[in-house]
Length: 295
Image (tube, rainbow, N blue to C red; front, side, top):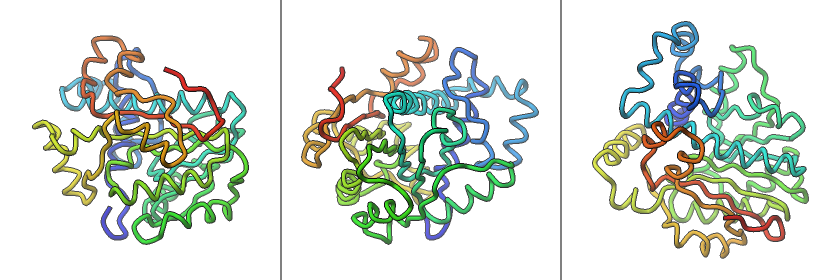
């Protein structure tokens, strides 16, 4: 992110979620009526009024890959969150929330306290757009400049906003880790652990290290685009090193899956094959004494 500008990649992600409405019904894993408005109000109205005529564009190679990937990524996290809420969880933190609208689109969160943490410029734009749409998010907005403030202060700021650090919390860290430095990753995980009482879970997405160090031709092009808008990719883990890395920071890995594999669990085969990259991954971790490890 540049200076005081709202996140541009967050707008791309939000738009991709709503573009899922153009996919065949069997591939529509998430319903997000808010996403396109964060790319552009004009784009949102166009999508709403001309959906049938735009539908073929969702199947263009490249664009379909991005839309399907976002459907899978969002749904995997949604499913983990639903399971946790069904188990009695009542606090959710969205770290680097961007234009996430789970608090509005997921009825399961009606009984939960949701805390959205992000840069003031991104949050201001989000609140302004939702107000124009007549949507009032029930979230607690926690303004935070990740580049200017030390992460060790964030647990106290969340507590001041109403988070009960003695109760379990589900933290969503979606689409963020690849933009951080090694030091920022370490500081962030230690901060998350500080507000994660037993019973808490952390859902995060990450890039396998090979996507950063040995990118394919297509990945190099994507890397150049996000770098050009001021949000370059910096960090990745190998799946083999992730469990020990988390254990050193008092988390236990529960699940680690490539988005390509998750796609075959969620989508028809002919659609899943478009989400072919094994280096974009989802991980679920637990605070000690929370839940049993699953395969």
